[in-house]
Structures are given as C-alpha cells and as structure tokens.
Image 1 (cartoon, one colour):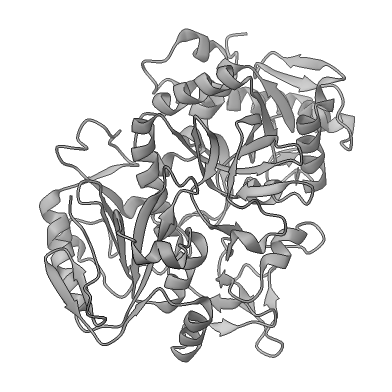
Image 2: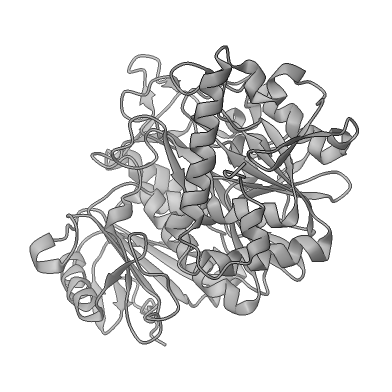
Length: 534
C-alpha cells in the first residue's frame, strides 16, 4: 500500500516518491486562519452574516463525463464499467500524477487531515491537498475533523490531490476535457484538476466508500438521516434537489447527516462531518435550520451578494440554480453527536417527478422498495450538473448512480435484507409537481411534504387505509393529516384526465424499459414495478 505522508520538515510534502518543496505549505489550519487567508488572497468575500461567498467559475456543478476510475487487476471485474464508471489506464494516471507533482513544486498548498465515517470502528483516515484556501476550508467543514490527539497519529489511507489551476490536455491525457476526476483505488489516491467546484472532492470520497464498504457487509447509501427523541432513525434517499437536506432538517428531530451514510450491523453512521445544502430560494421561515447555519465559517458557493449591503441573495440564480452552502454539522441546532443512529424504523424515497403523475406519498412493499431503489427515478434539476437547464426525467440506480461503482442489485439485495431483518417501513414521497407536469402544474408545497413525512414517522398514515394504484403498483393513503385529500391521488388534480392517463402510462413504461437493463434480478422484484400490461 502506498502512503502519502507529510515529511517532518514543515516545508516539505512527501507525495509518492516525490518530495514537494515549498515555504507555503499550510497544515490543518483553523477556520479563522483559513478565512483570513481567503480574504487576503481575494478568493472570497465576507457577507453580512459572516459567511464566505466564493464563485467556482465555469463549472458550477459536477462534471460526470470527466470522472474516471483506474482499470487494473483490482477493479476490472468488481466495477460496473460504462458511461458512469469510465475506465482510465494506470499508465495515463501515472503520467498526469507526475505532471501534477511537478506543477505544484514550490507552490502554496493547503492540507486537511481528517476522517470519513463517524463510526470509529469503520472510519477511514483521509488527506485533502488543495491549491485554494477556500477549498481546504470546504474540506475541513465537510469531512470529520480529528481531535488534537488523533491528529498526532493520523496516517492517511486515502489522499485527494485537488489542484484547480492544473488542467488536463485531452489529446495527451486521454481525458474528455481539461477537467478530470481520477480515482485510483489501488494507489488509494484521487486526482482532481481543471474545476473549482468543491463538490467533486466530496463525491470522490463518497464513491470510494461505496466501493469499499460492501466488502465489509456495510450498505453505503446516498441519503440523509435523522433521529427522533425516542431514538427512532429515519433515512431519506434522493438525488440532489429532491429534498433530502430540507426534509431531514426537522427541529423536532436530531440530524445525523444530510447526504451520505452507511448501514452496518450496529446501525447508521454518517460519512461526513458537515452539510452541503442547496440554497437557491432559501427561505428563513420554511428552512430555519439551514438559514441559521449560514454564518461565520460557512462557505456559500455561487450565491450573489449585494455589493452595498453584503447580503446574500438566495433568490438570484443568475450564476446557477446549484447554489450551495457548506457548513459543519454542529451548525445545525440539535444535530446528533456523534453522528450515528439505530437501525431505521422508516425509509423514505424522495423523487421530484417533473411529469406530475406519481402520488405525493405511497407505501411500498419490500420488493417494491428494491424495485424503486434500483430504478432511482427522479427529475434531474437545473444546475446540479453542467448542461441541465430544466428538469429532465432520469433513472439513477440507488438514488446515486454517479457514485455507485458496484452492481445496483448488490446494493439492493443488501437493502432488502435489512428491511426484512429490522422490519423497516418504506414509503415513496414525490416532492415534484402536482396539477400537471413541469411548466403547467406547480411544485408540491414543502409544508405538505413535511406533513407526509410526519405521518409516516408517527404511524398515522396507516390509520385511514390505502387505495391501490394498479398502474404504478403503489398503495396511496386515503387521508394524511395536514395534506388536502384531493392531491393524494394525482389524477384528481389534473383538469384533463385523459392527458394524465397518457402521461402516467408514459412514465410507467419508462420504469419498465429502464429496468430491462438489470439481468439477474428476481421476478418478484420485477413484478413489484408498474403494471404496463393491464
């Protein structure tokens, strides 16, 4: 195993076989010192609430086509290769790595040492190396910060070298563009260049955890999690923009984490030590916990700021819809520490259906849960990735296909086993459109979504009984406290019922067509999906 360790000389960084020499290597700086450097280097500005506002330039979202995994003896038959998991040769990786090491010789660097995984028996020590102070602050706020004693003995198992000012040369480097995210699981090293979007750092480490943990019988999950006063844990699955962060930030429950978790034999644990919340159109009254977390030490990505008052304008999408706030977990009032929880009582699959035909809330059987988990239907929202201008219907396995290197069925089987073992209830919640598709209908009121979540947690959703939806093979509650009964069956909200039927059948067929790509799946799981033959 290769080690990427710091030399005792405070002006040297040992990286592979090379010694990187510099008088400007900053190690594990405090938030205050990083903020001071960010201002001095004109990397960002201080807003009226004390947060730091930065811009990420050309790239305001992830670059999925520029993400690669090194194809070698360890990965050739353990990863599902294709459009999501692109192959990269070990030789080409080494060539870029050598050029990057030469590039950073003598340059100012920032280093963060920490952990991924709140469970101390499972966590992985990591090192993040940046050429921008604000990105190192991002790493410090998002990953798990070590204690002083832990830092003394910290030896990184994985290293991420993120050098924004270093670009790939596509013709020579065999990359798609000047941007690259290269994951080398054998060398335990990630190289990132050509983009200032900090989310690439976070998601690279998430992909690594999703590869490693199944071998330890731990289910990695793209979900948020919280816990009630009585210790009841709930998971919220969903892609960006579906409401994971907003719906899990409940003042009556303690937040475990907003995005990435593992499910072991001991329960749930957060991968991270912070939150990376979308903040476009953030409203103090609707999302007070996130609003109050935006303060000194928080990083605002691509949020415009009034030049006279220094006030962030969360309604302004002139830079991107994908505006973000990065802050440590303890900025959320009542967040659980350590960020671990019991086996979940309830699992919620969140989808933003832009077609407006899925019910706002429905109950799933175990097989239906596995079907929808593998399908991962949602509408990809504007700004989350480059080129997305309006909602687009997509299927993303496990509600996180861009970060899942292994077979979707592997993850689904692990989920199904846990649903059975711990008697977990599963619901599908549509946070997307009602009264028609995108452009005609309206987005479901978040207060209604919160009421649906509450009803699933307190069990009252079961009290009124269910109506069976034959097309989608779902069970729709007849009533839900705090939600107009009319909207529970989406067909009732459409003025043109024939148009609804056509659109609903279209989506049902999309589900079935998408699921055909999964070959070795039981018939029971296939039958739990939509009934397009009826």
